[in-house]
Amino acid sequence: MRLGSFFVFVALCSLTAYYIYEPIPEKIEERWKLMLTNSFFRSLSHLADFSELLGLKDYMGVMYLITLLERVVPVSDERVKVTEETLDGVEVVLYQPRQQSDGAALRMAVIYLHGGGWCLGSSRMSPYDLLAREMVNELDAVVLSVEYRLAPAHHFPVAFEDVYRVVKHFLQRGVLAQYSVDPERVAVSGDSAGGNLAAAVSQQLQKEPKQQVHLKAQGLLYPVLQAVDLNTPSYQQNQDMPILPRTLMVRFWSEYFTTDKALFRAMMANSHNRHESSGLLKFVNWSAFLPEIHHGKYNYSPPAVMEGVGGDAAGVDRSSASFTDPRASPLLVPDSALHSLPKAYVMTCEYDVLRDDGIMYVTRLRAAGVEVTHVHYDTGFHGALMFNVWPTDFQIAQRMADNFIKWLKENV
Ligand SMILES: *[C@@H]1O[C@H](CO)[C@@H](O)[C@H](O)[C@H]1NC(C)=O
Figure 1 (cartoon, rainbow, N blue to C red):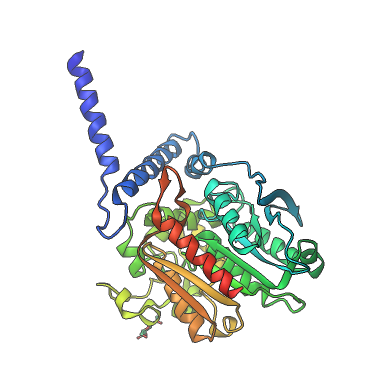
Figure 2 (figure 1 turned 180 degrees about the horizontal axis):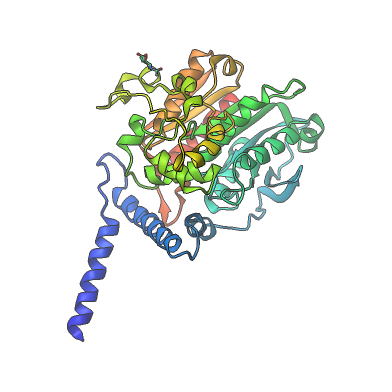
């Protein structure tokens, strides 16, 4: 019996050590804290796989626990008035400064789109709530945090359309006036999948012939920008990095479009592209758009283009029209669709599968004549911005937020 407990004890210890120990680059700050944080994410991910395997609850359903754990009820405080509203049928959390703006001065507005791979996350999570308050206090801005609907319950383009409806509704002169917002000072921004939606919305809005009020700026914080090449150098270099390993990103991508696992398998193998995509490969050619220092040890080879033939291909074919849609992959547009975009702040992290999505967009926007501020964190990892709340608070999160807010102050 005692020997039995001893074995159980040893087994538990090794299991814990296995979970916690994950080689993390020396350059990352607060490495031990990140290892511990990541062990939680990895355990949850394994549990989610297991639960799906047993048919108890699907993978994303279990992962959604992360969102629930950090959920808060956004409440007003002495400086910020917080209300939950519905704009054109879409839920938003609205943060407004309590102080009357000086005289008749109008304010800046920031439309914020949370991250979470279109499947997780909420504007009602403490990290986003905190970030919104910081923006209100530092910028005297109105912040609109959009509670768009999530996959897999709502596949593409629902998340995009929710956000687009809110943005179009808000950008009406009458609505802006109601919140004392200056029509010349509205920015859209988001992190990760939220950055994807922000980039997509900025592109689609400039195509509206009747749009009177335009966005002043777009803030893309480690954005997801393309689903065509899931083997860029950053995808390869960071495939096992904390918080967002390649498998999870591929999972998010595939679940955004379909619950059919065929797309997930094909995307894992980077063999999901069909003939129709071949003309788009030039827009994500990293050997052309990444500065040499980010090529690393990798040599460019374009993603394979498959012919649709039975089996898995059927499921992939049904989704392929969607994943190359610029509302899902904003990088897949010609320069002519980029040149009139609002100025951009693009933040990228070295230890992030999405690093190259962001850097390629920077190169392409600049080539098209768009004013871009690119901030690259050499020691940054994906999702860092969200780690601003005890006990998973990282110094880099505050630096990222401060830097972005400073840019908004000077540019919007
Ligand atoms: C990618 O870019 C390189 C270098 O600019 C070029 O040689 C190659 O033909 C391009 N390939 C594709 C598929 O666009």
